[in-house]
Image (cartoon, rainbow, N blue to C red):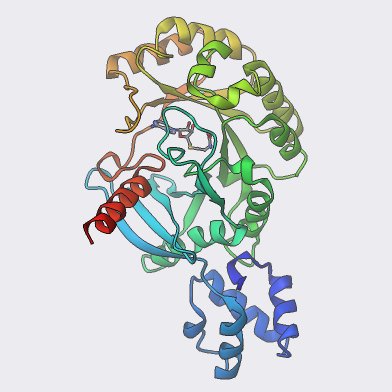
Length: 351
Ligand code: SAH
């Protein structure tokens, strides 16, 4: 089955010509697909073309199966069902400047970060570019009713984007196409746990997205306790790759740092982090840890977050606290999928 959300306008045209249909039909099909419509909803196509398309292609790669709305801040969490039965998550956040959608890039993840729910059962499979775009298209269809648009996309859902490099790069180009979703690359952030060769390769793609790096530790000793990937790449190598990205794209990088009690959250760690980043054009996003029941790691108090930020500021490191959104709806990575899987498992056991 060809995923229509994964095709460029040119590729859609080729498909239509291959089906011996007139070229102008391609623009119609592409427009419907980008509006989140299924083949049966493509009203301006002849029935015969719709029938031919249904035999070879699927219009929407993902379906919204569940939607949870936070009563705290209106954040919406989506559970998307894929055509093979797997499910993934997305989160829609509303900020003063518009909507931001957080998308997944893999079913699960194989990076094994100790604090993360997405990686608990490993990586089931990569998402295709059409599936990643499908998340955007499905949510955009909902927003259309409100005359609203997704302005920002963050690749911060389940999965390690650079562990699915080709599909992610293809997704970025598809999402940016002005004939389709037309999302500015400058409004897209990609978050990585620091796969150094892919960071360097990405710097040469000519895609000016914001690179966020999950650092979470000021040195290798601590990073190795919580992020298995740091056995492969040292903090120094990750920072050097970040500098190359900065030099080549002119985009300042963001470091993500989740505060974990007794591990990385002390003022001495903030001092060490500041020394590490001194002189670099960057910003630190301090994230209070979202505790995951399966992980036995604790977050920190409000006072500890503030103290950590103050220490960075005192050392002239630009830093903010990331707002927690959707705390009441399993907002953190992988939590809703995990919960749904637990429920499905419980259902299966019952019968
Ligand atoms: N694989 C990518 C994207 C994953 S998630 C990466 O590692 O960057 C986006 C961010 O959420 C990452 O910084 C990740 O480390 C962080 N994160 C994961 N689990 C978390 C938790 N329980 N609490 C706070 N942040 C978490």
